[in-house]
Length: 124
Image (tube, rainbow, N blue to C red; front, side, top):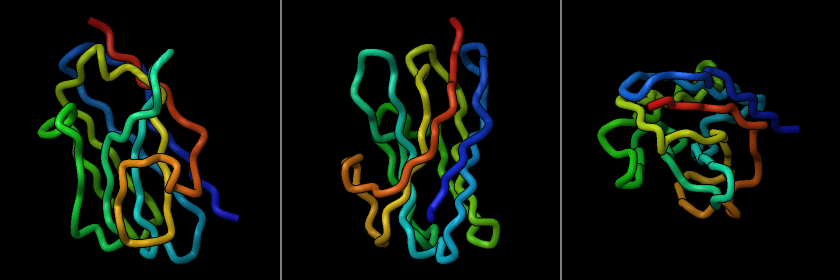
C-alpha cells in the first residue's frame, strides 16, 4: 500500500517562503515520477511541478517557474517543494502525487497515488 504524507504548509505573507515535504512509503521510490499539484476553491487541480525518478529532470509551468523548486531524496523516500516569492494567488491545497513510470506528465489523472494535501495560504 502506497502512502504519501505532505507537511510544511501554513500561513505566510506575500513574498515569503515555504518548504513542503512529501514522505512516501513505497519501497522502490526511485521508480516513481513525482508531482506536486494544487487546488484552490472553485478551481481545477493544477500541475505545479514534477520530477523524474532519478531526480535528473524537473518540470514547471510558467506560473511558478523561477519561484518554485522541486527536489527529491531517494534515500529518504521524500520529495520537496521549495516555494519562494509567494503570491496570494498561490493560495491553495497542495498535493503530492506519484506515478509508476519515469515520465512526468501534467495530467493529474495519470497519477495513481495521492497525499491528503496541505494548506498553503499567502496573505497580501
